[in-house]
Image (cartoon, rainbow over the protein chains, first blue to last red):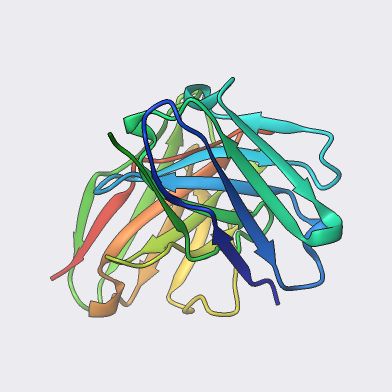
Amino acid sequence: EVQLVESGGGLVQPGGSLRLSCADSGFTFSTYWMDWVRQSPGKGLEWVANIKQDGSEENYVDSVKGRFTISRDNAKNTVYLQMNSLRVEDTAMYYCATGYKAYWGQGTLVTVSS
Amino acid sequence: QAVVTQEPSLTVSPGGTVTLTCGSSTGAVTSRHYPYWFQQKPGQAPRTLIYDISTKHSWTPARFSGSLLGGKAALTLSGARPEDEAEYYCLLSYSGPRVFGGGTKLTVL
């Protein structure tokens, strides 16, 4: 069964960078598209980015294009979200999820504040 | 990017039936949007109930079902229970990018 564990969240100043990781302890990671989803405090879910099984295709929500980069390492069963030029409005719980069937992790909290 | 619309709030009586819908600004929702439905309770991560219009996970209670209805994706809850009170989100795919609806707050009262 898919088990996803996110890490890398924390407090960062506006303009700073963070790299989130999401590791899958299962054996089917390389067969899934992978998504990152976020939820700002008290708000709804927002899809952020996804990446194809072999990393050959990436998609992003407009608000993060040019600032965030999704990548994956199938040998490590891990997907990453590199977040640069962070803004206060990027403050959220960040979840990873499989692109198919949507298995979710428990999330990692990113706080952007001075 | 597309806008996905859901009812902001709905109320259902215990034991009653309610249908939540999910529409797309680009037109009718079809199987090519691969509709998903999620349930989220306060303080918890989302939980996937339905994927690909109507397929359930092993943990999805039988009282939940998914369909396409009148150009929208639909989630029907038959026989509502107090523990079904939650926020429900739909997700649509647009040939790569995906968009969540704004969520429906379901009250069982």
